[in-house]
Length: 544
Image 1 (tube, rainbow, N blue to C red):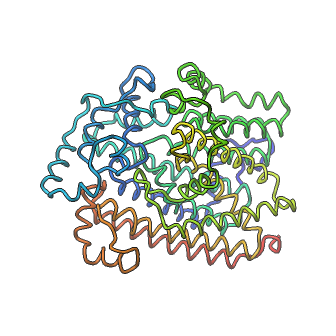
Image 2 (cartoon, helix red, strand yellow):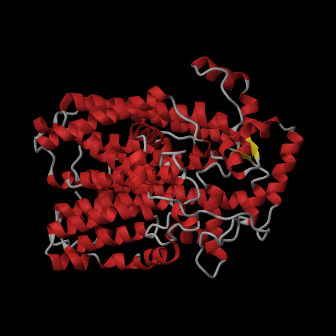
Image 3 (cartoon, rainbow, N blue to C red):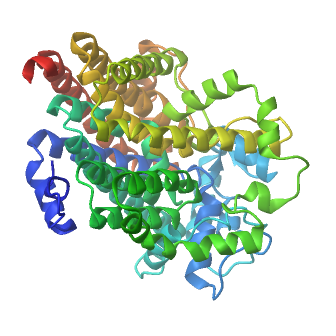
């Protein structure tokens, strides 16, 4: 445990708590942090321009914050002119082409003659800011903090081309998010007293997740909200172990920053209020909430401008009959929950390509086993109180996802019933710790389930690079979904793959393959090491 949590009077401030945490990290912890950083940089590099979720619109919002003297607003803010021009010069997912009504898909792009593709890349590199704006920007209602940070970096000299500026922002986002999420996850795991193998399992599963990197390694606001949420949860756990007004203020300040980053963090506010008033006298609890005043003006503006607290573009864009709450009664919930869970594990960026159904469901089945184990432990009163009070936070996040599904169903008149899979990532990070903690108390069955989850996560990461993302970014498909098909692609068409990959990725094709090979090697070694440690670990009850 860090000194910030172990001192009842909270005499140790955040800097000393950070130093205490860093001293407690083992060599394996640091290796997992390095693994997370490598995957983050690789993901930012292999992801083609505008293949990140809604990335053209998020980057346009960054440009708005860099140059406008007033806040962006739905109905007034537009797609940046340089971005709009670039959409005609790069390969796009079939879904983006359909939504935009123009553009060229990856398959179509790589069927063009090499000379034509080279001319398009030259035109892309020659684009300059200040071009006429495109259509409207439906992301203009987003909370400002992440965009303000990115706008400051975007204005730095030294990156004249659009690609250079986007890559710089992606690397910034991916690196900060990975390091901060890793430290927050380790802090939370130490507070909950997870055994080292279980702590490593939770971190490995989290940072092997394709959806974590798909969420963090593109231009948007999710890269900042992930660590802010996890830090808020960890600060709340520290408060629950050693309640003090100072820790309450820290948790509230982190939540305030999260609220200024993404409105979905409104779901966390009831939990912070609950634990403060549960553990402190009401005057001290009320005082500890004062940092939330920093976020209040933004949400008052949402009410004034969009007539809703969150500023969701579904409400801001146009009027719909009825309400999401009434529409929730019509949502096909079994299918919606299945789809949401599956996409939360793996979603192929803006193209929304799927991973093997069997692999994803196997990982979800292991999560269900862990959740069932946690429920049994709660019934038997074996879960420590501080950990038990984190489960309502998970429930609030799950309820917010259900609300987002209802909004989607209502807004599309029943055509869609899924929230964006990036919304599920804060919950996924929290569950990686809570479920591994439950499995650590479940004796041999729990250790076997945790080791299986680690192994499956490594397998899915290898498939992510070699079967899914690298071939897709190169405009190539496997002749058959088997080991023979993979070997045929890389052995017989490897030179063409490297060449075409270099056209769409942000790094040379050979550099991408080298990073993917190193990531794969680390994934296999870490998975074997963590699984071995898990299976050799004594039962917690026996160890105690």
